[in-house]
Length: 109
Image 1: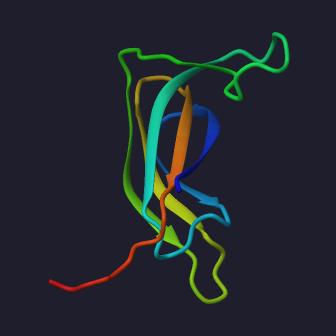
Image 2: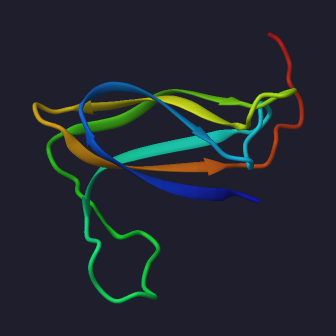
């Protein structure tokens, strides 16, 4: 079963190495990470969507590369990735991390 969390990173620019520790992830967990420019809206009534704002599909290139789950032995579970925000000024970015069920087999080719 897939599980997801969403993180708002404020004022991001360039290529930034990120790490998010989460118990749902270990070294054998396939992880999908997506990113988009974001327009937060913190006001309004409670009880609506969990996400307080909306993705803003503007002209900036916002994307993720080099996704690497971790967590084996005594190491905390989580994921590291590179967040790319190609724009002249800092932007707010929303990242969604989705953890899938652990892999069944690891093979070498």
